[in-house]
Picture (cartoon, each protein chain N blue to C red):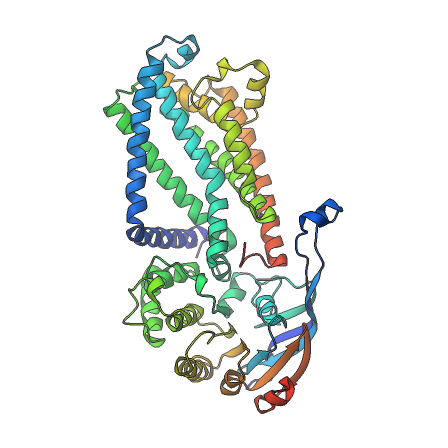
Length: 249
Length: 274
C-alpha cells in the first residue's frame, strides 16, 4: 500500500435546497427547508485501500460518493480523488475514477448488454474495434459472456449489477466508487459478487475503492476500514471487526 | 484525439444503439409510417381544397399552395425537433436514470447531450427529403426553379437558430423540472404567426410584427423564396440577416442558460432524478 492518499476529503458539507411548495411560494419563498446531507466530513483513503462507508438510510453515503465522483458539487469543503479536485476535474479525472452505480435504471432497456457497453465505451473515447474487444472481455469477466446479446430488460438484478461493474471497468480506473454493489442480490449472488470485487477487480489490479453499503457482511468481506456516517456527520472510523459495536447491533 | 473525432465515435455508437432499439419498437415504427401516410393524404386534400381557389396572398410564392404548405410543415417540424429534441431527451434520460451514468464518463457533457439532437436532426432531414421527393414525384411539386445556393446558405443558419432555442428550452426544462415551457410557447406562436399553413400577409399588421420576432417566420421566408420562386441570397437579404441575428443571439444565450442549468443540476443533485 502506497503512502500517498488516493482520496482526500476535507470539511465536505452538502446542503440541499429543495424547491418550495405552492404554500411557501405564496409566502414569497422559492426554496423549502434546507436539508443538510453532509456536515464537515474529512477523511483520507490510501492508495490500494478498500474503505466501506456505512450508515443508516439518509446518512449521506450516496451524497458522499456522488461528490467524490464529481457528479455533485459540495456546498463547502474540498475533495481530491486520484490527485484531482473533484469539483473541477474533467475528462482525465473521469477516466481515472469510475462511479459504479447499482441503479438498474442506468442502462438502456431495449438494447442488449453488449450494445449498452459499446455505447458507454464510445463515451470513454474507445475506438470501435477496441470497444468491441474490451466489452467482450469485460462481459466474460463479469460472467455475462453468454447473456451479452440478450436485451437488458431481460437481465436479472444480479446480471444488471454485474453489467454496471463492467461499465465501471471500461476505462481501467484507478479508483472505484461503488454505491451498494450487491443491493437486491440473493445471498449467494452477493457473496460471489463480493469475492469477485475484492479479489479480481480491486486487489488484483491494485485499485482503491470506496464502497457504500448498509450490510455488515459486505463491509467485513470487502473493507480494510469502515467509515460510519450518521446524520451527515462522520461518526467513527474503525476496522471491520468493530462494525457491530459502532452500529450498536 | 480531436474533439470532432471523439464526437464522431459517440455519434456512431449512438446511431447503432438507436438502430438496435428500433427492433424493440416495431409497433411505434409502423405507427410512424402510418403517420407519414396520413400526413401525405392531408397534404393532397389541403392542396386541392385550398389550391382550387385563386388566392392573391399566394402570388409571392408563385401561387403554389402545395409547395407552400409542404415547406411550411417541414420547417415547422425542424423547429419542433430543434426546440424539443434536446429537452425531451434530457427529461427521458433523467427519468430513465441514464443521464447520470453518461455524464460520469470522460465524454464532455456537450457530447453526451449533443448526440441525440444531432441524430434527431439527421432523421428529420431524411424525412424531409423523402417528403420533398414524394411531393415532387406523386403530387407534382415543381422545384425546377429552386435556388440551391440560398438553401445551402440558409440551412446552417436555421439549424443554429433552432438549436439555440433548443438549448434555451433544455436549460429551462432542467431548471424548472417541468414540461418544456419554451417549446410550448414558441411552438404555438410559430404555428399561428410564422405562416406555416397560410401566408403571414393575411395577418393584421401587429400580429405580423410579433411573427417577425420568431425565427421560423424568416426560415420559411428564405426556404419558400429559394425553393418555390428561385430567389437568390441578395433578394432574400432581409430574412438572411434576421436569421443571422437569431443564430448569433440564440446560440450563445441558449448555451449559457444550458451550461448554467447543468451546473445547477450538479449542485442540487438532479442529474439522477427529474
